[in-house]
Amino acid sequence: MYDFSGQISGFHQRHVRLSNAQRADMKRRRETNLDRVKEGLQELKKPVFAETINQGGYAQKTMTQPPEADQDSRYDIDLGIVFGDADALAPRTTRDWVRQAIDRKANNMKNEPETKKKCVRVIYADGYQCDFPVFRRYWTDAGWRYELSSGDEWVASDPGAMNRWIDQEVRCKSPEASGSYQLRRIIRLGKFFTKTQANKEKRSFPGGLVSTALFIEAYVPDDGRDDR
Image (cartoon, rainbow, N blue to C red; front, side, top):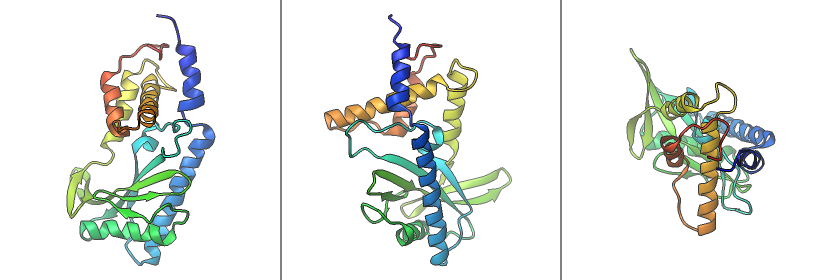
């Protein structure tokens, strides 16, 4: 097979992977949203959250650029908001605290913050979306345990499990010993392909989380040959 690895690498750098400026922008957006939640809760005299947990492509370092000329494709940021067990109330009530806090402090929103079944969703006018899943935590002999606010129930959850699994798979399966891992590059290329095809064909493709799991399952290491 002809070696297209150089072309693939160049394409990945120019069109798929976020640039340094884009990554810095994502970090700034995350911190801005975190400040909005914190300040909004304080103004509403609601409990302070105990911690936050990065999720999705931002945490897993698999975010991609949107397809060219695709105005509907958004940069997604997933930020889990965790309250202490003693502070959290009913699942829907606790989730609504976060919605109210964002609504109070945010601007430049395309629509008002929306309470979904498992998160609070914000879509901004300048083309990015932020989901805030809401958790409560309690201490056990085995460490912290988490529950997700899902509808009207608190459901047992491990918000960091997917991140840990992906990180382990990337480090263990990629042929490189350190640095830029091949599996992470392949995940980005695959996610970019699903975005471009969904935009081109005007139909749904698997979302980022499902796509990532599929690419990990199908991945076969090939040192120096991302094209294969």
